[in-house]
Length: 116
Length: 113
Image 1 (cartoon, rainbow over the protein chains, first blue to last red):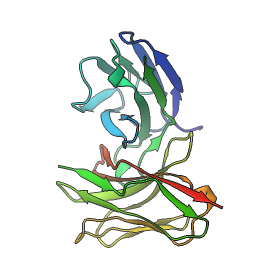
Image 2: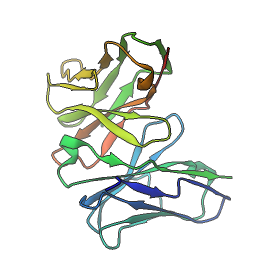
Image 3: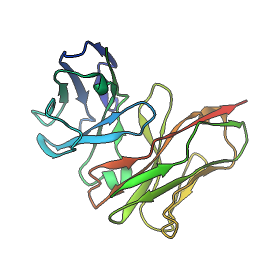
Image 4: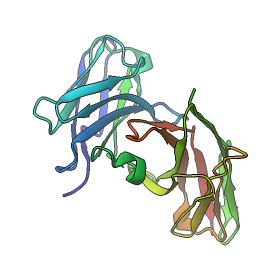
């Protein structure tokens, strides 16, 4: 197992375009999380899944954002009609349910989005 | 609400110097506290944790003690190395399931030989 993988590593897009990111968690982890990290800030929680169910969404996740985890394995995060304010690092993490408190998450290296 | 306030950076130290990065928190419940580290080009990695008051988390020579009376979780290392250069994030998690972490803004550390 190579940990949490995110693709692509970098994405440059024009304002107004749609983008989609992918996250492959550690295979035995049933929880998957998305965070956003802007420059000079710590990561901020966006949403999380337990298996295929999306159980919590932050108010940061506007209507232009949608996340899916259709088979309880990989997840996608789509941003529609991108805005310059969407430029950030998008982090994915995974864990076993209930283990986050004791072991933290395993984070991926992130997808850096630049909206021009 | 839940939040973490971290010492502003960047911090530059000479090798073998003593390191302290301050972290204080507010929490609606009884939090667990964490330090994460992010090396250049890599994802965040859990450095250490403490789940109850007076617990001391330690790893790779780093230590932090959960101080409920001062709502603090300061990170310390007695002798830093060049390889410790990274960004350090203090974080908290509330509740039994730890559904989400609340992170500080991060402190960039550069250690010079």
